Amino acid sequence: MDFLIQGFENTTWQQLVMYLIGAVLIYLAIAKKLEPALLLPMGFGAILVNIPLSGALNQTMVGIGEVQGILEWLFRVGIEASEAMPLLLFIGIGAMIDFGPLLSNPKLILFGAAAQFGIFATISVAALMGFPLRDAASIGIIGAADGPTSILVSQVLKSQYVGAIAVAAYSYMALVPIIQPFAIKLVTTKKERAIRMPYSPKQVSRMSRLLFPIIVTMVAGYVAPASVSLVGLLMFGNLIRESGVLGSLTDTAQNVLANLITLLLGITIAASMQAERFVQVQTLMIMALGLLAFVFDTIAGVLFAKLLNVFSKQKINPMVGAAGISAFPMSARVVQRMGQEADSQNHLLMHAVGANVAGQIASVVAGGVILGLVPGMLL
Image (tube, rainbow, N blue to C red; front, side, top):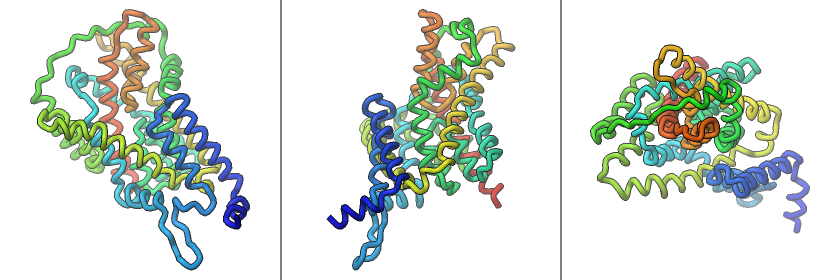
């Protein structure tokens, strides 16, 4: 009873706010089915770590000394010390991705590059708003539309807002079906959205599929060495898939490994969502900047496609540029749905998938570029 009374006495209004945030994340995961594999454990973890004297975190107990909490240990070992969790997740992601649509139409890689504009634009805006460079860069990477990359970059740069950045990244990834149509309609007409793009896939040889992950890793390593761990594990997962001789390992990477790491990553990141660090004005600013990054990404991809149309005889539906963000496959599905809304006979899915997987590569390269540039600028 004494512990119960002490717990209620130690509960702050900030912790009550975190209980509400946790409840909202759980609601979105279960009722709305928005990124449930991540929002549900993050929501429950947000409640867990904000219970007064929570045993999930390190605490000092009278007569015993410091007791190590499981979430604090997982955070230190799996994220803070080694960045192992977000990196291992890339193996599973790579094993899930079919780069065939991109290899069939290699110019789609340009859309993946163009749609990373939001990252660098948001870094500039965050810096102008007064965030230190390490935090501004960490906030900007929300625009990668890639949760593991956001967590990894913010942790390596030792941002003080890791929890808020993770929540923003995964929340907006879940809200892509709402955010992207709004942004696309801002810069396109119905006539442009109705542009048809016939799909005549080229045969992609097995050798091309095998060489692609190796070549991408080497090119990324020379262009942005800091991206090797990100791109390398993503491409390693894809090489397992394309090898054709590791069927059981491919299934394990796609399902068991990816699901287990996703589950642990979601609840472990909650260790950085303690009320005193999370409930502050800066968190609201980060949420606003994260939304801005997603909108900038989408608009930049669309405008780049429109620019190409000025010089191209075969017109590109500008919405395909919006699929260049890394939110795979949600963004491609958004483009397909909006294309059919404008013209019921319009089929853009495979073009959008190609741009979408290009965005997956471009986002991790962008994360590596930031990790390569920012530490040197902080010296």
